[in-house]
Image (cartoon, helix red, strand yellow):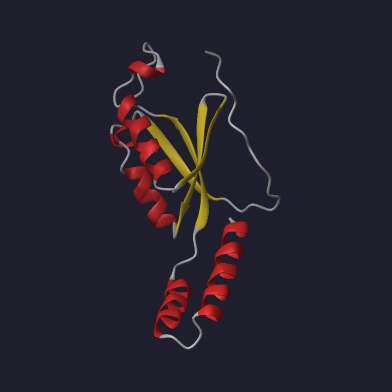
Length: 138
């Protein structure tokens, strides 16, 4: 995220130099400055009271809708990372505020139906790295 912000600032600076003095450059600079900063939020997802222990995950109520919701968040660039561990799920969301991140989660039909519950926490990266998705066997 820092790399993207630095690149955006560099591009904006170059654009300002090329178009210095023009109204367009001033508008672009003020728009970039007005864009709200995005924060990261860790969302721990657990099974809720609507979970049916007699059914596998893919047969749970709203499971397909839950997967579709996560895909929409990913496609929109709001879901940065998704993983499972033990009997929990973890997603990292990018949002302007905790309220916005909560709103994203509240749109999930499986959350609404209490198949899953979630806890949202600030996610402050102190050591950046790269996480690769595990390859699935065919």
